[in-house]
Image (tube, rainbow, N blue to C red; front, side):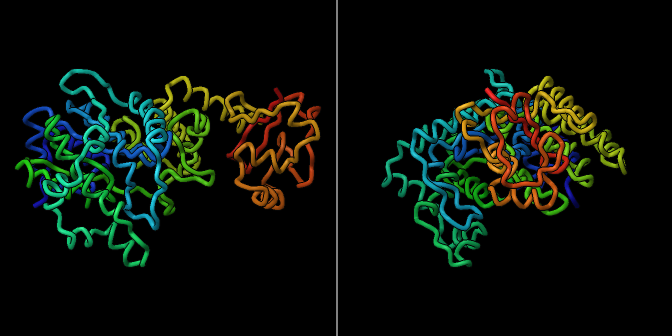
Length: 416
């Protein structure tokens, strides 16, 4: 018989679609009912911003706190120096300490928007595993921690096995990653009484490793829980777009572009994404997701507004919606569009229209722009661009120029 959770946190996870696997659902539920449960998710500092692919687990931490428990955000200042090999075809580029610290600084601002960091029982805390990993003595670590790991078992993990099956090399450095990540759980349990590690389902092997190590080293009763790996209804990995990653930091992706990403959600995903990425009641998420035809657009706008309000604030969401209405319904330019600023020096001899589309991040290359022009998909001030050799001069930018790709991607070009 399937166990039915009784704690608010697990009930929320089941109702909203967050739960993929749990090492001991009933045991975790009982712990959640007894008192405050500290739980962590780890984030390696591989970029200056988190992206939409991380948002599911950030919402997981938010619901943990909203139901009375303690979120721990673990920054991988130590593990990033090694690199997670999980489901990658090659080794991650190695970052130096300065780059890692810079990335952590960029990532921290996002968490403060979703979690309350303070000294209360359920106040979130932020840790950096460099605190205990940087000072490890290699021989002591091998003796005290490494002896608990079976190489045979490590080779059986899907993240490692898939790499070896494709005859792609796995460095000894990467092979150590799962040992270091498992050791994180031991340290966070010892230092902060953490009982639960959470993550995406691709982290299941690493999470189970940590639980097993903590039980061996500290006889700790701890738990692991994973969320499903999300793909959109048309099979694309969640958070990827033609323009690249959907970043959560406003300096890497404008709030308007972030809003537009959610506004462009496929009809079939609206209800599911409302449950996962907003705090609207489940019944309302299901009602909006069941709308059909043009009515589903109302659900998409609500989704975009709710998610953008959480990430960038209600004012940014309102401004993005206003800009979208200006652009799509009235044919205007919209003050909040992503903006490319060019100087008179840059325009001294003119700039090709193709180059402008690339600089405005509306296409990846000149070849892409020429293809868009040939397909009648590129516009300047709502007029079709028909000549890939067109040159734009300073006089052409006395007023802002709106560049468009199709009906959904726009940018402004202004002269400074």
